[in-house]
Amino acid sequence: MSQWDGKSKGTVFGYQIFVFLIKKAGIKSAYLLLYFVASYYFLFLKKSNQSIFYYFNKRQGYSYLKAKCYVFKSYLTFGQTIIDKIAIAAGMRNRFTYEFDGAEILKELLSNKQGGVLISAHIGNFEIAEYFFEEIDLDFQINLVTTDLEHSSIKNYLESISKKSSVKFIIIQNDLSHIFEINAALARNELVCFTGDRYFEGVKSLTEKLLNKEAQFPAGPFLIASRLKVPVVFVYVMKEPNLHYHLYTRKTDFKHRDEKGLLKAYTENLEGMLEKYPLQWFNYFDFWESNTH
View: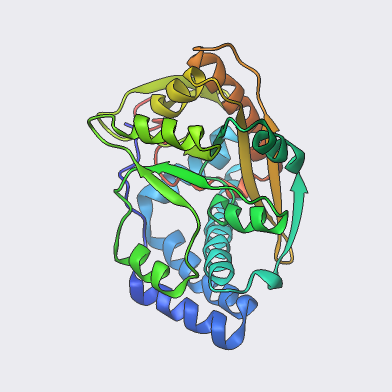
């Protein structure tokens, strides 16, 4: 199955080393250490290597050698986004430059005073989005809908060294009580954010093509967003060279209660991002169920 198990790689000690380097020697020095980490992943993480190689080779259509090279580059890029997130959260936002593409859409959401739904993905570095919103003086509350599976010692450590986040979390519950929290947030003219690209075993899923092959997506974000009478936008924060980030916001049109139509619009939009930023696909598991098909 292509569902994610909710667990991320890494140790607290490893993060502590990077935090020490960032603070004492700068962000670029921490990047250098990533070559050793990426080499370890490239040599020893068989499952994630197979999955990301499949993405580059079969879904992006790269040659065998290019795909192999991009597996290593992918680990480097992913590591850089983590370092950037730590640095920005620890108060080094001014070391980075930012570019806004569609900020007027977010401002329009606020002015309508009906809230809105953001749908993102595990590409780029969406977790630093709140710092972008500060940059363009958008004073609103983001509610991130998530499972509690990623609450770990790493997460606790990162929270201890970061400035307090303004993002609120709505935890998905088996009794569906999170639906009431979502509606309450929208009633307060707040934004509710989902990631639409990872599902867990036992959770209802929808099927749609991504990069010319069908894959499973969590049904929840698309069922909920298609039934709420609020605007839905796709938002991505993509890394570019020289400590630069690019925020993309795209409005989408779909029929009310048409979750399949919303999912199709999402996958088409996601494909456009992956065409431009192929190295920033960070789903290191068998997303397309390639081992069974």
